[in-house]
Image (cartoon, rainbow, N blue to C red; front, side, top):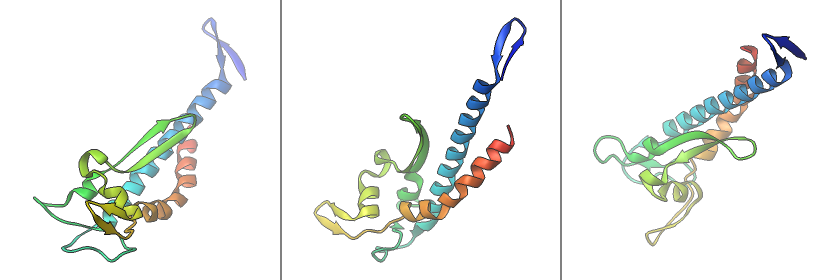
Length: 138
């Protein structure tokens, strides 16, 4: 629908499309927060390694370990709205990827101890509701 307001054309379709895009971004940001929180909660503060196939333990250095604190999230636009969630390489180096997928680090072999994929699987079902809530507020 196109209208004329105050000497200029107003394209309601463009305004609606912009509002829907913003709602999508807001829902993705919220999903990123939920996945990050779930991943952080799954990492326990215990001594010794966790069993292979279970979320890793964090080892306290001065207070709580760095792995849970290193998990960040953010939205990016690379052609379509996306959210990136995971441990920051700047904080914990490559240990996040090695723990999630398994592999070798400093000549030690690690079995996978996934924490991000289970968190995503647990929260992804929330996305339709998050989007519906944002669209309801248009």
